[in-house]
Amino acid sequence: MNLLIQGGRVVDPSSKHDAIADVALQDGKILAIGQVPPGFKPDTTLDAAGCVVCPGLVDLSVRLREPGYEHEGMLASELAAAVAGGITSVVCPPDTDPVLDETGLVEMLRYRSEGLGQARVFPLGALTKNLQGEVLTEMLQLTQAGCVGFSQAEVPLVNTQVLQRALQYASTFGYAVWLRPQDYYLGQGVAASGPLATRMGLSGVPVAAETIALHTIFELVRATGARVHLCRISSAAGVALVRDAKAQGLAVTCDVSMNSLHLTDVDIGYFDSRMRLNPPLRQQRDRDALRAGLADGTIDALVSDHTPVDADAKVLPFAECEPGATGLELLLSLTLKWAQELKVPVEKALGTVTVQAAQVIGAAAGQAGQLAVGAVADICVFDPKAHWVVTPAELKSQGRHTPFSGLELPGVVRATVAGGRLAYQATR
Image 1 (cartoon, rainbow, N blue to C red):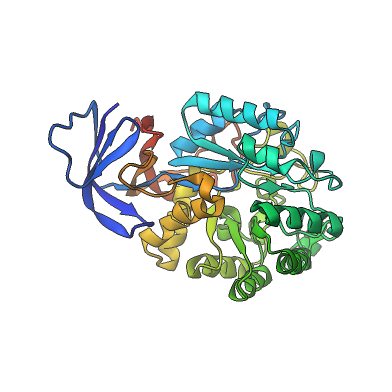
Image 2 (cartoon, rainbow, N blue to C red; image 1 turned 60 degrees about the vertical axis):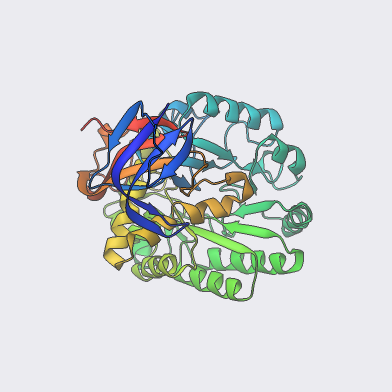
């Protein structure tokens, strides 16, 4: 299909391109940006006047819930939510059921997702068998099956010796290890430690749960030379440690959840189960440090931490309900909201959810997160001046729980092109 996106503001953070231009697509790839070749005849023309045309967003933390948790989300519903949010590439952790620790499971996930023709799925393989922290998986075979890295998802690896061996092996073959820094024994609470958790009688997770894990990871990275991506940093102290580690030249990158970027523990209110999240919402000083860390480049990427949860699992008391929230359709808007509040240029803000996120994935991402002639056409077209109200019933995700319900947000996705095809177009 030939597609012409006409008259939009083309913003590509990877090349620093920012100008009004046409974008011509042919056979699934970008044919031209700017001057449309003579003789090009589009099958479809999108009027992008007043809109921003940018690379399709890349989300590094998306639970698709399939296989094993189809009552909370399906590949079809969650990938439809992704393109409705302008996202064309997603990384999914391995904590499905069964766990992604065998090549057949990874291949099945990729085959089914590719057949839907929506966002591309980059799976993470399990670091240890069944995420039990005892036996390393066959990383070579999982990489050949399509895994872009290895992770324990939300399951801390208690045995430091196993973690060291995993990092040694990964370093030898150039694999990336994705870890959420949280000490197993200190991380058993349901809210961030502090006056509010104490007053509400909720078990707390101290900042030390994150910093102790970070110190351990950094020492092992220093010893092994492994490349580690830190998932969803949540504290001011954590940001400072990552900043120091990068200054020392350690091969680490990190991301932050959009929930931690905009919310604090005060938002729990009267035990609002929508605020039951992992990592838990911390104090305002932590949120402010996360915002500043993303702006100054200490934090590499912003993620939705999309975790659809079944309705029955959220009506339980706060301490018993399942943590998680839907987020795919909110990532772009919450990126713009952060940028507006901190006066971050739109080009720089979009970089945190496009090219910088793609760089974390590495070579397997190809040219995802950027607009380049000859590259696969993954494009988001959005109206930066339009606003919308988050209405759970109107979300495409199967999970309808979000802490941002009822909030008015900037930025409305008008169209999403995934793999050269028009995967989503707003009806109003």
